[in-house]
Length: 317
Image (cartoon, rainbow, N blue to C red; front, side):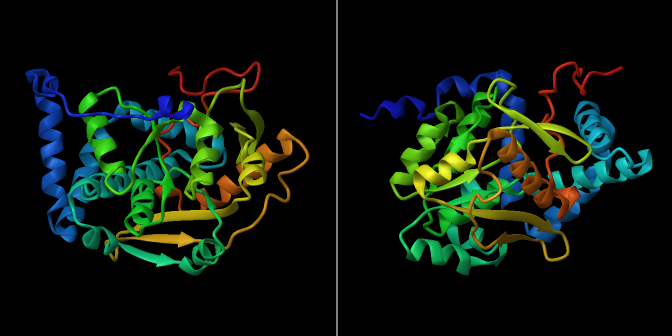
């Protein structure tokens, strides 16, 4: 038994999940399963009509999105932010209402949901028997991107942030382990990443996650400062992996996800010190986000950790 097995995350079905207090959760799961088998054009029509209601009632998420946009884009007007928030919620609904596809539909159906560019860049890496470190931002279609690779027999080191709701945990683990053998909690960190890559798996690295001031370094990020975890250079050196920027966005006109795999590059520009690597990561993250601002998960508290002396940006005044 490996010492890293303690970081394996398992969420087996339990009879306690059938307690009446979870009736609302099960109704939501049922809705998602129905949506998974609903024709995509009809589902997207429903998602767009639902956007106005969610925009009105989701006060806390709207507040978090607005706070992020205020500090990242100081010249963006209130009307521009409102329009972007509305489109962002629309993209959330377009993605989440179809997400049960990943847990219940066939491989053939899942693979049909993508337009893919740049597969030749990944093939070049795999043909050489090497691994990719996919660098991606938290877009609403990120779950689809990971499942696409696993459906295509591209092994991935998979992590999870446990949900407070045990039923959503169970469903999330069911989805992520359909086409792979295990999923890890993020506390496993770099050791789990390196172990997986030594086993021939590829890695998703998400530089927008906030791991706290003790582990991160601050660097410019749009019109503010963001704490980033400077471990990409160490990962590349230890695993001899290749950095591959990855972007996924939902195309409402074609009702499919556009997945772009870019040419691999090394860590040049991220070497020397942690501060320079944090700057490198933040610039890379900016580039990925700016491809379509409406696709990014602005609902995340990506700026929770602030430089010394700055107060939390998410407090309501």
